[in-house]
Image 1 (cartoon, rainbow, N blue to C red):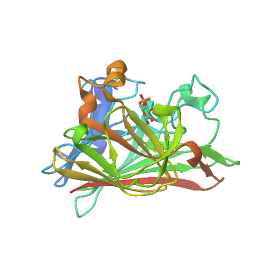
Image 2 (image 1 turned 90 degrees about the vertical axis):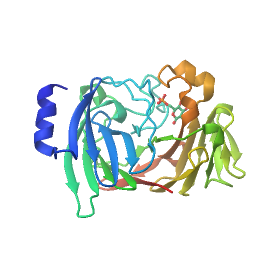
Image 3 (image 1 turned 180 degrees about the vertical axis):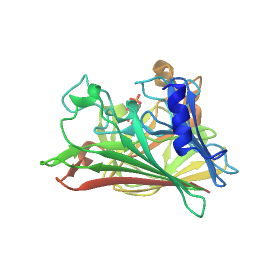
Image 4 (image 1 turned 120 degrees about the vertical axis):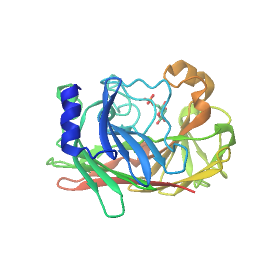
Length: 300
Ligand code: BG6
């Protein structure tokens, strides 16, 4: 992105000291500061990379070694995984978690209401490089509402003449004081596929604790989850709609070191709780209809 586009973005949507555009590495970012929170969203992937409610530590984790480079996924924030989650069903050379997170999105709307809630609307802009991966007509929109809460809605329309099957996730990286003193409640009794154990199926008993690599797809659950962040003495509440799977992930030390963009000891200060439709929870969207996946986060 050039200076000119930063300037034209600022001219079109900028509000002094409230909404402004900048560049981090190769990526254009929209920054928002309101009486409720501070936030930043990368135009590539419409990927939110910061949300910090007033008086709080950051809620969303961004790796100190994240690469903000065109066409590469950014480690942290809220990557949008779409139109498939994980590996593609049949085409092993297609990118993991789909292509939505590595292409440009268009910002088409910025609004502020009388309570100071800022809402942004983004549309995915398909380009040549993705045309061969998704032969369907499915406009994709992401709406982000910023307040003392954060609400994100991913809207898939099916403008095609046939039903379309997708899997997806809002792959949120949450910041915590210490993963070893963190637990996740809300999934007691749910069944999950354990990716660390070749997708074997287990049933959750009690809260989730973190003592080693954790990579699980909880199925058939719309439950609200709570991250109990003991080190920072806070709870992060995760409510969702239109999502039947919850993915819980921490790569732990060895995998984290091998990934190269997690930062030194980065795995100690993060976890992903992803609101998804994955594995057996794929979504079929009938022609002329839409599907919405919505999450809402707040901190107590
Ligand atoms: C999680 C998956 O959703 O994303 C993990 O369950 C994966 O298996 C992780 O390692 C990170 O994926 P990526 O493509 O961003 O490195």
